[in-house]
Length: 150
Image (cartoon, rainbow, N blue to C red; front, side, top):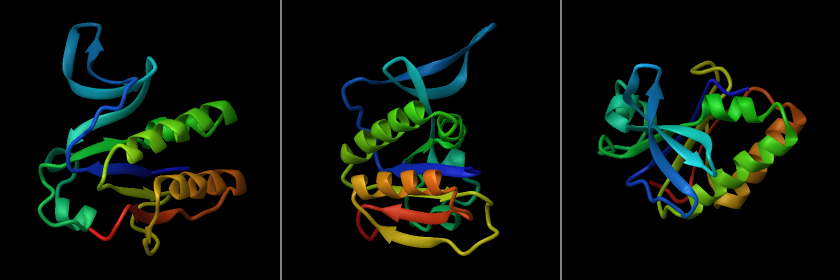
Protein backbone atom coordinates (compact mmCIF):
# COMPACT_ATOMS: atom_id res chain seq x y z
CA UNK A 1 0.00 0.00 0.00
CA UNK A 2 2.76 2.47 0.96
CA UNK A 3 6.11 2.82 -0.77
CA UNK A 4 6.70 5.89 1.39
CA UNK A 5 5.19 6.76 4.73
CA UNK A 6 7.40 9.23 6.60
CA UNK A 7 6.78 11.55 9.52
CA UNK A 8 9.12 14.53 9.78
CA UNK A 9 9.39 16.40 13.12
CA UNK A 10 11.90 18.99 14.39
CA UNK A 11 12.59 17.12 17.65
CA UNK A 12 11.19 13.76 18.64
CA UNK A 13 9.00 14.17 21.73
CA UNK A 14 8.50 10.88 23.50
CA UNK A 15 4.91 10.45 24.72
CA UNK A 16 4.21 8.09 27.60
CA UNK A 17 4.32 4.47 26.46
CA UNK A 18 6.75 5.21 23.60
CA UNK A 19 10.40 4.16 23.79
CA UNK A 20 13.49 4.38 21.55
CA UNK A 21 15.54 1.20 21.29
CA UNK A 22 18.69 0.32 19.43
CA UNK A 23 18.16 -2.59 17.03
CA UNK A 24 19.56 -5.87 18.27
CA UNK A 25 20.94 -8.52 15.95
CA UNK A 26 22.28 -12.00 16.66
CA UNK A 27 25.71 -10.33 16.86
CA UNK A 28 24.65 -7.50 19.15
CA UNK A 29 23.33 -3.99 18.57
CA UNK A 30 23.67 -2.25 15.21
CA UNK A 31 23.29 1.44 14.34
CA UNK A 32 19.52 1.29 13.69
CA UNK A 33 17.14 2.90 16.17
CA UNK A 34 13.44 2.06 16.37
CA UNK A 35 10.49 3.63 18.12
CA UNK A 36 8.39 1.17 20.10
CA UNK A 37 4.83 1.53 21.36
CA UNK A 38 3.71 -0.88 24.06
CA UNK A 39 6.47 -3.35 23.12
CA UNK A 40 5.56 -3.23 19.41
CA UNK A 41 7.99 -1.79 16.89
CA UNK A 42 6.37 1.29 15.31
CA UNK A 43 8.97 3.12 13.20
CA UNK A 44 12.62 3.35 12.27
CA UNK A 45 14.06 6.65 13.51
CA UNK A 46 16.71 8.60 11.58
CA UNK A 47 17.98 12.15 11.28
CA UNK A 48 16.62 13.68 8.06
CA UNK A 49 20.15 14.13 6.66
CA UNK A 50 20.60 10.33 6.86
CA UNK A 51 17.13 9.40 5.63
CA UNK A 52 17.14 11.55 2.49
CA UNK A 53 19.92 12.22 -0.01
CA UNK A 54 18.53 15.70 -0.76
CA UNK A 55 16.55 16.71 2.32
CA UNK A 56 14.98 19.92 1.00
CA UNK A 57 14.09 18.37 -2.35
CA UNK A 58 12.47 15.37 -0.68
CA UNK A 59 10.69 17.09 2.18
CA UNK A 60 10.01 20.51 0.68
CA UNK A 61 11.17 22.05 3.95
CA UNK A 62 14.37 24.13 3.90
CA UNK A 63 16.71 23.85 6.87
CA UNK A 64 15.38 20.58 8.27
CA UNK A 65 18.55 18.49 7.95
CA UNK A 66 18.66 18.07 11.73
CA UNK A 67 15.00 17.10 12.03
CA UNK A 68 13.92 13.55 12.87
CA UNK A 69 12.26 11.20 10.40
CA UNK A 70 10.07 8.29 11.41
CA UNK A 71 10.06 5.74 8.59
CA UNK A 72 6.69 4.03 8.86
CA UNK A 73 6.06 2.30 5.52
CA UNK A 74 7.02 -1.24 6.56
CA UNK A 75 5.06 -1.00 9.81
CA UNK A 76 2.05 0.64 8.16
CA UNK A 77 1.96 -1.99 5.41
CA UNK A 78 2.06 -4.79 7.98
CA UNK A 79 -0.70 -3.11 9.99
CA UNK A 80 -3.03 -2.77 6.98
CA UNK A 81 -3.49 -6.55 6.85
CA UNK A 82 -5.56 -6.63 10.03
CA UNK A 83 -8.20 -4.16 11.23
CA UNK A 84 -7.08 -4.36 14.88
CA UNK A 85 -3.44 -3.78 13.98
CA UNK A 86 -4.43 -0.90 11.70
CA UNK A 87 -6.48 0.73 14.47
CA UNK A 88 -3.53 0.40 16.88
CA UNK A 89 -1.15 1.82 14.27
CA UNK A 90 -3.41 4.83 13.62
CA UNK A 91 -3.87 5.44 17.35
CA UNK A 92 -0.09 5.49 17.87
CA UNK A 93 0.38 7.78 14.87
CA UNK A 94 -2.20 10.17 16.24
CA UNK A 95 -0.45 10.29 19.63
CA UNK A 96 2.90 11.01 17.97
CA UNK A 97 1.44 13.83 15.87
CA UNK A 98 -0.50 15.34 18.78
CA UNK A 99 2.75 15.51 20.78
CA UNK A 100 4.51 17.61 18.13
CA UNK A 101 3.52 21.20 17.35
CA UNK A 102 5.10 20.94 13.89
CA UNK A 103 5.11 17.86 11.64
CA UNK A 104 4.85 16.75 8.05
CA UNK A 105 3.66 13.34 6.84
CA UNK A 106 4.45 12.10 3.34
CA UNK A 107 2.62 9.08 1.94
CA UNK A 108 2.97 7.61 -1.54
CA UNK A 109 1.88 4.30 -2.99
CA UNK A 110 4.02 4.61 -6.11
CA UNK A 111 6.86 7.07 -5.48
CA UNK A 112 7.40 9.91 -7.91
CA UNK A 113 4.73 8.67 -10.32
CA UNK A 114 1.84 10.97 -9.39
CA UNK A 115 1.45 14.62 -8.39
CA UNK A 116 1.71 14.99 -4.62
CA UNK A 117 -1.19 16.86 -3.03
CA UNK A 118 -0.54 18.97 0.06
CA UNK A 119 -3.03 19.15 2.91
CA UNK A 120 -3.09 21.09 6.16
CA UNK A 121 -4.74 18.75 8.64
CA UNK A 122 -5.16 18.11 12.34
CA UNK A 123 -3.86 14.72 13.54
CA UNK A 124 -7.38 13.28 13.79
CA UNK A 125 -8.25 14.35 10.25
CA UNK A 126 -5.05 12.76 8.91
CA UNK A 127 -5.85 9.50 10.72
CA UNK A 128 -9.37 9.57 9.25
CA UNK A 129 -7.95 10.18 5.76
CA UNK A 130 -5.54 7.24 6.08
CA UNK A 131 -8.34 5.01 7.34
CA UNK A 132 -10.51 6.00 4.37
CA UNK A 133 -7.66 5.21 1.96
CA UNK A 134 -7.22 1.75 3.47
CA UNK A 135 -10.92 0.90 3.64
CA UNK A 136 -11.67 2.10 0.11
CA UNK A 137 -8.43 0.69 -1.36
CA UNK A 138 -7.84 4.22 -2.69
CA UNK A 139 -4.97 4.45 -5.19
CA UNK A 140 -2.77 6.14 -6.01
CA UNK A 141 -1.77 7.57 -2.67
CA UNK A 142 0.35 10.69 -3.14
CA UNK A 143 0.10 13.38 -0.47
CA UNK A 144 1.89 15.46 2.10
CA UNK A 145 0.01 16.51 5.19
CA UNK A 146 1.20 19.00 7.74
CA UNK A 147 -0.21 20.59 10.86
CA UNK A 148 0.31 24.10 9.49
CA UNK A 149 2.10 25.65 6.56
CA UNK A 150 5.80 25.01 7.09
